[in-house]
Image (cartoon, rainbow, N blue to C red):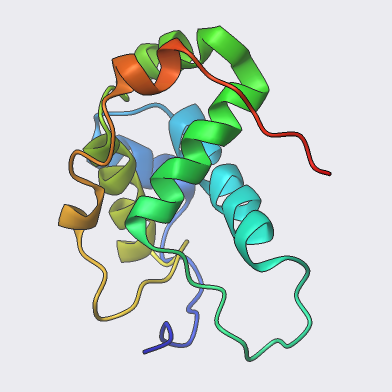
Length: 134
């Protein structure tokens, strides 16, 4: 089932950040940018506005990992840790705060549990190799 019709955000992002109280604004912005990166990587350029561009929690976690590594290399885990993002469930908490406040969409099948233990941060950010486009 495709996501519901988008609705405008209900409150400013800073208010959402303050209400969640666990992560700074930068973490929320990173997740939003990482979602765009992941959608682009998985679905390419938008050709049909009505086509689903949905990504799963697992896909998003993998995309966020790659996006972090592209931005910060071996410092990715350190940067995310400074934002209190230490497990994939943290990505999920940010995503669902954004969904609940109209910044992102989800399908009826998407749950916070989709983000639980997708990968171990220590292993995922320790050794990495970004595949270059061919």
